[in-house]
Length: 334
Image 1 (cartoon, rainbow, N blue to C red):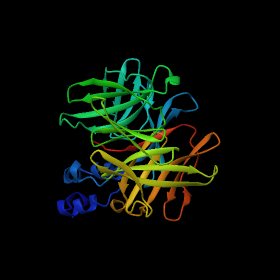
Image 2 (image 1 turned 180 degrees about the horizontal axis):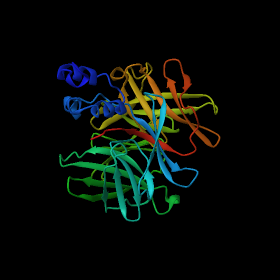
Image 3 (image 1 turned 90 degrees about the vertical axis):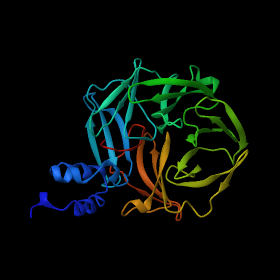
Image 4 (image 1 turned 90 degrees about the horizontal axis):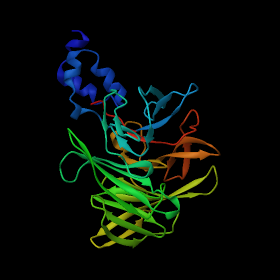
């Protein structure tokens, strides 16, 4: 019996141990029998890659994708690259934009589609990309600087993505700046505004309520496997930091933050300057829960590290420092 003759049941067992999506791609190209044995719904859960976009020595733009599974960086040349990369946690697609509209690119397959809708404001970041709560296609939610940054207001753009069209369906302003904590959670947009949390309807922009939050500081809002977490960063020095974790307690109109003193259990947070993602460590061999992968800064360079919430210790991961901002991206080949 040759490799091409392995039984479908055995191939499915092997496929569940592949881990990183690059292994899945290699598995599928062995032969037709292997390719047909694994359905996209059977792909193992994927760790995010850290995505960095910037010019090389010759001025050409590349995507650099760091895989924490392999602790390696892959470089992909972006064909016909143009415009600015929109940073923010995403799945399947990275998004470019210029004066003509948006370009959604799958860096694994090279497939892409263009959207003529433009994001309002300047220097947009991605807040959410996923299922539309109406049940029709997906939505992408962007946050961008207003025309005058001194106004301390940013513009939210909601783009509906259907199979044959994409439409800018709504824009509205929120009283925050790029870099302030903001997250999409259960069809609402949560924004950190000084010592309060403001809640908006994510689709029509209506303000729903405002409630107090703990001490103001640099922080993140993360949709964390069913919970909305507030992650507060305390920088003790350039080399030392502490994280505090709060969970949103939702009592209808009575919303408040509760500090988690025992950490986040099996969950792992992936943070960048522009938000983050959450996964369960138990879905991945060799990964430890109750930890945070983050992007740190040392003078003018950036690096990737892991922070253990139990010991408050940091482990450096990157073999070299980044000189550009980046964000997390969950790969998907189809």
